[in-house]
Amino acid sequence: MELLLAIAVGFLYAAGIYMILRRSFVKLIIGLALISHGANLLIFAAGSLTRGKPALIPADQDELVGQYTDPLPPALILTAVVISFAILAFTIVLVKRTYQEVGTDDLDAMRTTDR
Image (cartoon, rainbow, N blue to C red; front, top):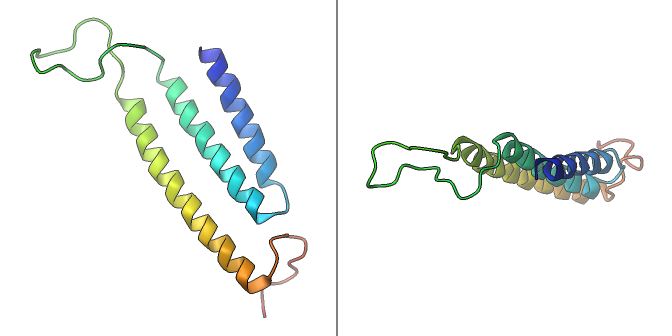
């Protein structure tokens, strides 16, 4: 399972970097989204996969015994989702405003932003 996640992370990072290096702002947004999903999968895979094990102490016990899931990776993923959503929303607004001012989303067509 970890090998499949590693391949998925590599594919998402490669596709995200490829899309960011394109000339269009829309592809930049898609690339940022792909890289943020790749980062979330990387954190998930780094936390080691344990299925069916508790991450929290049950109410009737005082401590965890046996195998348990580390609760830190899901907490980090939740934080990363919020941060990536904020960055994506800011980028979309910035691209929309740039398109309204310049009239194109092609970076080569933009010689200057001064008007």
